[in-house]
Image 1 (cartoon, rainbow, N blue to C red):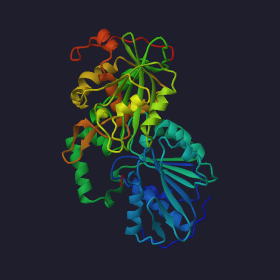
Image 2: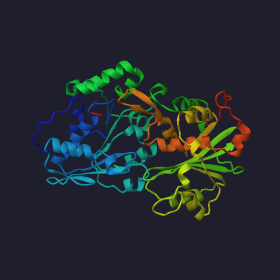
Image 3: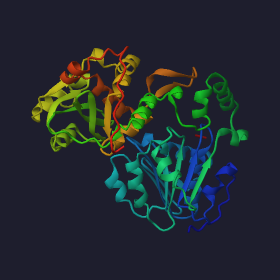
Image 4: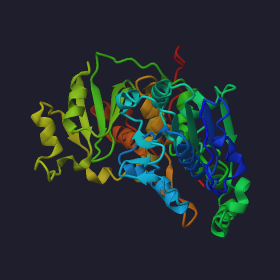
Amino acid sequence: MFQVVKVQLKIEVPKEFKVLFDLDNDLRYIVLYGGRASGKSTSVALSLLILGMNKKLRILCTREVQNSIADSVHKLLADLISKYKLNTWEVQKDIVRNKQTGSEIFFKGLHNNSQSIKSIEGIDIVWVEEAQSVSADSINTLVPTIRKAGSRLIWTFNRLTENDPVWELIVKRADNRTFVQKINSDAIESLLSKEIIEEREKMRIDNPEMFDHVWLGEPMTAKTGSVFGKQFAQARSEGRITKVPYDASTGVYTAWDLGIGDSTVIWFFQVVGREIHFIDHYEGSNEDLGHYISYIQNKPYQYTTHFLPHDSKARELQTGMTRVEFFNNHGIYNIEVLRPTNFSLGQDDIDLVARPKFSLCWFDEEKCQRGLECLRAYHYEYDDKNKLLKNKPEHDWSSHSSSAFIYALMAKTEQLDVKLKVKFKSYTPKVFRKTKDNWG
């Protein structure tokens, strides 16, 4: 249990967040979720700073993907330290340290960082920001790593889907050591600016479906911008998200989304009759291209074609080499670069290609878990200024796997061309068989 030394500060925090400052409880998890401008992030950040001024603590601030310190809550903490003149805190480039107590606040991403996370020792508090985006794998790696007596994990989020991993693994399994609080902006009305209230009320009238998601913290639906929400639910109900084994008698295709300073994704799929079987998936970040080539070469699959993005023929400044040449130098020649004219990932690509072909797709639930989470969360960008959904998907953690998935369905494989002969505007999918495995 933490011991508190009183510090004289006059900071107003909504009573709904009192639990964050109560160190006499025995809570393992604190879950705070809800819509925009509800004070979640600001209140948690203030609690960490105040607690760290009274006792030496090791605090980890994390999220699913953190490509740089700018992706973290580092700036929020720095701003609050400045605003409230919390001068015992020293803000450094990638850590915030208290000069009086020795408390440290540091920042890490969870995705593809399991070994680094597992090596962390002596953590008192973890704050998982934007927890709706955290994968099941990341949760299952993080939780047992935080094992110091009296340690706690704080989860803040606005629900994205009905089955966000944090909802399934933390909220639905809540026990007497878990505090769950939904809070929306109306609970802290007196602390909101006139502009925030006007923005909220305008959306309530102009776009009630989006209002429910943005301001009330309700899961996103097709009406509120989910790209594949309907198709994903249909795949689940038809038993197409199940165990899909590798068929060694037929070749494997891969479809790539190659990131520069961002995530790289590979989907592995086979065409079996009139079905597209996604048998495997891999996503990584902060690795060079050689890492991913080694990864596919170490798989037991026999490859037919590797589909690469249209810019794979462009020469990189650092090496003077194209990515296609890099693949060739590593013994991989069965490559097709998708044409730029079919590569804009506009609304036509989604409406006329991806959604119709989604009904042909089967997914291995275990090996494609991360990819499935991304497809479920993939959503259109919202235009705050004009209060409407844009005609393009949001570029975020879910977009890399979703883009590579769309590339896979756009790819012109011989089997797909001959056997499907799809005219997308009039195509009606067959009925599929069931399987046996069925503040902010």
